[in-house]
Image (cartoon, rainbow, N blue to C red; front, side):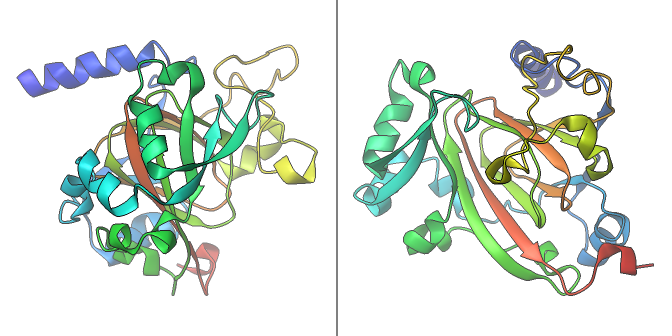
Length: 269
């Protein structure tokens, strides 16, 4: 009962910073670690999102990455690109090149929320092999004769936001440390999410879910979506072209696995 009360309190606190209607509609389905066959049949072939728990408990990263001294020792002197600002669609957004140690210092500073710094979608594991050894590619990434396309790190403080966008590949998103809010919209309603016209941002919505301008984007407010909070140790499957918005609710370290397939989900039965 105490654990449930704590989770409820955390959820109520999260609602204060989340977009309107969060956690009030359809929630992304949760399953305890399932077989590859069940994943393919129930979710992959149906292009349906799911959160899987208990699948990465054996990763060394689950404990090692909580130790700042460990991260500093193996990666401190390495130079990394970071995003600075609320999100990449904001005017004040920029990219800096800093060392991993400098990044950790920024995250731990008292005023980090005023100058959000985010290591986002970076192939950190190609750069730092020791970190790559702390994780394992989930077998779900082989669904459909899958071939891993990219393996990226997402590491940052409370309050980082990835604006509403979609990606071309199957995505398995591992929440190694911390908590994140995730909201998903089906690919079939793309036009109602007002994609940017510019080629570079054509996979990104013009709609700011944190402050929807209903006069400029009248079709978005009442669209059906599904959402949930990713807890430590969760895996989230996002099918190709599904729109997603992500907000960190604490210091958070995530890993995304993109993979291509030799068959299309629609070819399955």
